Image (cartoon, rainbow, N blue to C red):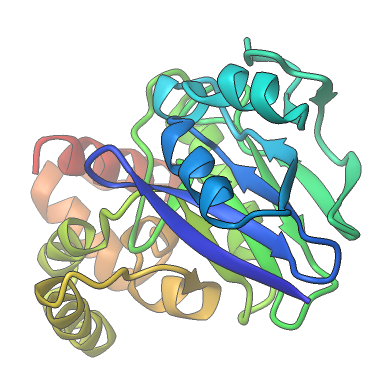
Length: 259
């Protein structure tokens, strides 16, 4: 049986720790800081960190990788087209790996960075998606390296996964993302309900993750660029007709960058 826990790091990062209780082996996703993982291992004698999964090269996702590998001998997986510290296995689109007895499909999802990848375990019920900084709860990552067209395509690829898919992104940005979603679609009742729920959770200092794709499609403006309400809003804001979903997405991302 696999258990997944969030290890908080920095101000708003989550390091996802996957635990196989039968073998006492664990894996961590995007360990920007080694300390929370080492502290967990010290508190759980007999457990071994066997694998490290990396989605992209930003320091808050890779800063602890080399130290963890040195301390534990874990195998490091990461995108082939980015500079990942201590990487053992370079991954490209549509590869499949096995971690803790689970098969993960690798998706190239450029946009936030050019080599960004996501890990998808579709055999679980519900399926699991570890998507780094591509898809957030009610949002998406900034375009530091890629184009709006690349990011829109990446998000659409993830949005096509099953409704029940659990979305394990790596930042607690949900409340601020929903404030933007309310501005985009003020009449969207699903967004209003989620905003109220997330406001309560954060007031109690509770995590809002994981999300799921059914909820994202209802409430995440970056997955709703094809909706008439979103298109109309962006046409009004930009004073022009955004003739494609990519154009709507680009306008949304530009607005969010200064929101």
